[in-house]
Every structure is written in structure tokens, then in C-alpha cells.
Length: 323
Image (cartoon, rainbow, N blue to C red; front, side):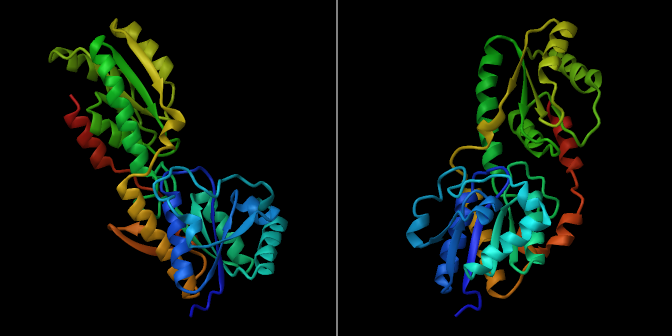
């Protein structure tokens, strides 16, 4: 019998495909260890507003293939205060909850750290489509978001080719260009702009299009990360500079939705199970991560202090083969 009598699970920050798979794993792994498992609705707000419900095995039936999060998500300004954190911890204690699994990003992990400091063991599970959590080489939702972007850009390419057009496509990623980079490679984009790499429009877009035109190609795809932005202005500049029709498309939140991929379902299930195992062993203030392709865990403080490293070699490959 586990020492952890009752645990809870919540999703926080932006939603990501695979969150449901992770919370399903938490609920079922916990119950199978003899725990009571509570679902917290609307993130940390749920701990402040009493939106908590005990879960059973059937509570999470048939959600593994659903996008979004059945527990909903919200941001909580009150929880950012010491008073709010103390009140949330006290509410957990009133229900006998001694551990919480938090599925989300860096901001969610900071909340988990604060809750742990108030006496409630917390384990973070990285869930964000941007793949921008430095401590983990993979985050739940990333693969699905990339495949959604890939499908959309492939469709855009069809019409770009039909009209000898240049299509500039903005994908998500404010601080992280991973979606742009990998989608750009997968779609054969002529140019890829990401926030991690300093760029020059003439050198990195115009010259690349001109050189590609010389080989006989008449339609082009430029993939731009959200953090770079300016796709409409870029389309106007390309049109004026090169005399070819250019259209801008912002994919937006379509990338957040949809049924999670096999990889996201499996990784989310692994991470959710690992989080319960850590709580069962009395751990707190940890983050479940993927390192060298394996599921492991790190101290939250160590994890939050890490600096993300952009894959410049992959970017170099993209620049070499996208001609």
C-alpha cells in the first residue's frame, strides 16, 4: 500500500494535445496503487475555488485520443501571491491531498515549486506544444503540433504551386523555433526564420528565393516562427522586391488542437506514470523529463535554471538542403 493516500492532478498554462493521456495515466496509476486521485479543474484556480472532484477508473475512459484537457486550464493571478499559495496548500490538506501532479510549462512548474514549499509535494510533467522547456528534450504536444503544421503547410503548398506563388506561413513558437525548424525541413521550405538565429531578410529570404528561381522553381514556402512574426510585411516586401505574388498565412491555434499523435500519447502516459511513482516514493519538487530518449526526473530548481539549447546543426542542415 502506498504511503501517499491521496493525490491530485491538474493542467495549467496553454493546452497541448496529449495532456489527457497524461492525466489518464496519473489517475489510473494512482488508483492501481491504492490511492485516492482527485482531478483539479481550471489549473491552480481550482485549488482556490474548490473545483476538485475525486476520479475513478471510468472518469478517464476514452479521453486518450482527445485533444485539449478534460480538466480545463486557466491562469491564476491569485495563486502567484504567497497568500494564494498558502491557501491552495491548506485546501489540499483539508482534502487529505499530500501530492499534486502538475501538467504544463515553466510557469506551471514555478507554481508547483511554490506549492511544494507550502508542504504539498508536487511533480511537474512538461506539456507544451512549443517544446520550449529547457530541462526536457521533448514536451507533450510537440509532435502533434508539428504534424498539424505539416498538414496545413502541405495544403498551402498545393495552392502556391498552382499559382506560382510564394507562401509565408507563421507557425507557433514565441521563444522557441522548433516547430518552425522541423516543419520547415519536413515541407522543404525555401527559408526558415526562427528567434534563436539572427537573420537578414535579403540574405536569408530574398537571395535564397532568387537562387532557387535560377534552378527553375516557381513556387516557394517560407516558414516563420511566431516569435519572429511580421509575415504580412514580409509578404509585401517579397512581392515588391521580386515581383512574385506572395501570401501570408498565420496558422494560429489550430496547432494546439486535434487528436494527439502516437508519440504524444505514449510519452504522456510514460510521464504520467513516472509522476505517480515519484509521489508514491515520497518525492516532491521534481520534474519528469526526457533525457537521451529516456524518461527520468530532475529537481525543479535545477530544471528551471537550465538554459535551452537550440539545435543549430539541424538548422544548418535545413539551410543546406532547402534549395
